[in-house]
Structures are given as C-alpha cells and as structure tokens.
Length: 294
Ligand code: GUN
Image (tube, rainbow, N blue to C red; front, side):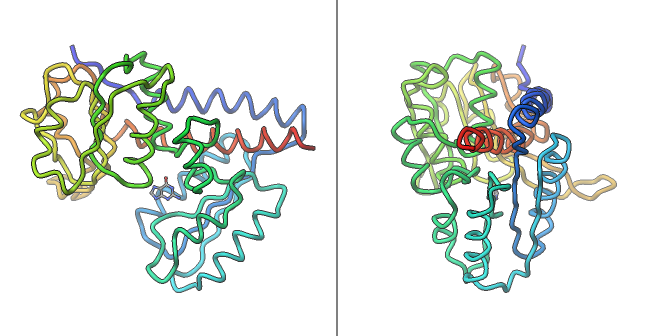
C-alpha cells in the first residue's frame, strides 16, 4: 500500500499550532507577528501565491502587508523599501517575491534584507548557518519537506537521498539539510541537475527522491526503484480536456509511479501547501525572537 503524504492535513495542523502560539505571544508580549510581501509586476502565478500568503496571515492573526509596485520600478526603490521595513519594529518578516525583473540584482536585494527578518532563509548569512547546521530560518519549501518527513516518521538516516534540481530556493538547501547529522536527516545525498546525462542512473538508486525541476511528469516508473519515498516539489500547469482547460501536475508522473513507491506527495495537496505554512512558522519564529528583546 502506497502512503499518500497529505500536505493539506499537515499544513492545517501546523497552522492550528501557530494560531495557538500566536495568540499566546500576543497575550503575553503584545507582539503581533508582522509579514510584508513585496511583489513587482503582476505575474498571475506570483499573484496567486502572494494572495494566498496574505489570506493565511489573516487567518492566524498576523499583521500583513502586501506591497505591489510596477515591474519597471528601479532597484533603488526596491532597496529603499527593504531598508524601511528593516527599521520597522512591527515587521518581523520581509519576503520579496522572486523571480525579480532582469534589471534588478536579486542577490543585492536579498542581501539587503535584515538576516533576522529573512523569512525565506535566502540571505547568505542564513544560508551559511544552514550549511554548518546552526539554528536559523530554513527556506520554506525545504522546511516543509523536512516537516513532512518528520511528521510521517520516514526514516532518513543512512538512506540515499537523491535531489533532482539545484535551485537556490529548493535543490541546494534541501540537499544541504539532508546530510546534516540531525534526527530527521543524516542521509547520503546526491544532487543531479541539467548536466547529468542520464538522471535515471541516479534516481534509480534513491531511497528518498526529491524532485524540483519544473518539468511536468519527468519521472516515470522506470526511473525509480521499488519502495522509494517520493517528494514531488513541481507545480506545473499543463493543458487538459476539462472546464478550466488546464490541470496542475508535479515533476513526477504520479499515476505511473504510484504502485511502485512506498510513499508519495500528491500535486496539488502536497509540498505546495507546506511552503506557506512554513513561511508562517518562520515569521512566528522571527516575531518570537524579537519579543525577547523588548
Ligand atoms: N518564488 C517562488 N518560490 C519562492 C519563495 O519561496 N520565496 C520567494 N521570495 N519567492 C519565491
């Protein structure tokens, strides 16, 4: 029997836990977790994510700002907004929705965010902490994956984790987490990417397979071994013969691999759901740390 790792349920559990902790934080310290999201332009997919972040903030009683500016805005304007929020004590998390337009230096923007307010965990200071195993914000999607593995009690120690994809947002951080000498990790890790000539050669060796490349239905049953745990990070829109004219699929061909794997995250209803819950967790954590200094 294949286990379906239910991101919808887990993310609701996490949000309920956060609602309780937030209520307590507000009652005991007066600190209301505050998150600002900056979106440049009106890319529809980004707008869906940003709106959903705002809705979740409201549900949890967070102070939430969504700041939208035109895609043509200057780098200077973005940096000055970030600096303003760095100095605003009602804001504990700053998220600049990526990707940014080409005329803006993404790394410069990320590096300008106060590392204590970096709820994405993308600042080089926090990336460094993650690599050497120090406490700090974990990028939200990898954090969501870790929580899924933990809460479903999936054994990772001594197992071979294969990560497909090397993005700064998912592939690199999750690979760096999975080999840490920690109870939910301690794996042997392989990373494959676009220069891997035959990824199947690697994916077939995986006990835990994490795929984050944005290629619909890339992984088929011939690419995996019997009993693998599959974490599918892909969220791809493909044409479909239904009312909407499209459907959302992962990077793994779910129906094809289902019988062969021991556990799998569905798309939708898997990792995507967890990302926002973990953003809320990181924002709570920042607010909690800030509450200790007042
Ligand atoms: N764009 C896609 N995923 C993310 C994310 O996790 N954080 C930010 N800031 N932008 C994204």
